[in-house]
Length: 280
Ligand SMILES: NC(=O)c1ccc[n+]([C@@H]2O[C@H](COP(=O)([O-])OP(=O)(O)OC[C@H]3O[C@@H](n4cnc5c(N)ncnc54)[C@H](OP(=O)(O)O)[C@@H]3O)[C@@H](O)[C@H]2O)c1
Image (cartoon, rainbow, N blue to C red; front, side, top):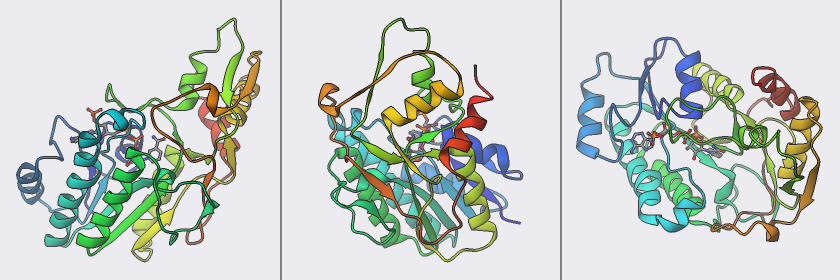
């Protein structure tokens, strides 16, 4: 059995690992700031037993915020990841790290694991650099790109709220809900992703880059429609162009993650149904 350390343990994805793994050690910012190299290295070295796997879910995830605070985004998504990769390599620990479909520009719509990143936002660039750091410094690693995570919100106050929760918060609105119809992504249920990664580690899949999302894709408009249809909430969702929602960061119009290396997960609609049965 592996001894696993989860970083970003109070985030949406990290929280799922803490929930499903057997006796993991879970750290969040209060336990150890991953941007502080010496503290991180010392704390990991002092763990007894030493972890055989580190799952890094800590990240700067605010896509628009990264345009205003590029230094903070690169510090967490690149620098800290490089340091973690060096520590993991020195201590012969397997590193599991998460990245995003936003490392791609959307020019070719579908991307396989070995396609070359070409980010169009600061967030995307910081995550692409983080991937390079892992490849450069870690010996045993999984880089898992994923896309549009949803699931129970992490315990941490700043943990990213999913689009689904944002939509549900609007359900009593008396006005039409506008949702962008010209941006399409793969969609991922955090508990399904965590279970898949647990299997990847246990079954000792070859190290490298993986694309793990639920099957299928959706625009924000498709997703909003499905949420309200499953919940039988009679709101009017109106498709709008992304030009109507000017945001600081540019997003790819369509950057779907092709999974050519791992058994496919269930369709996102099934996962969404399960999640929505747990929330009011
Ligand atoms: N959410 C998505 O839609 C999405 C899409 C594609 C890829 N991803 C990737 O998936 C991974 C997990 O995302 P998520 O949505 O689960 O993230 P999340 O909910 O925002 O959680 C991130 C966690 O990292 C912690 N953290 C931040 N700075 C830290 C620091 N300096 N030291 C230690 N911990 C720190 C946060 O704590 P505080 O809250 O206290 O800062 C938070 O608990 C990330 O790599 C992300 O880039 C996410």
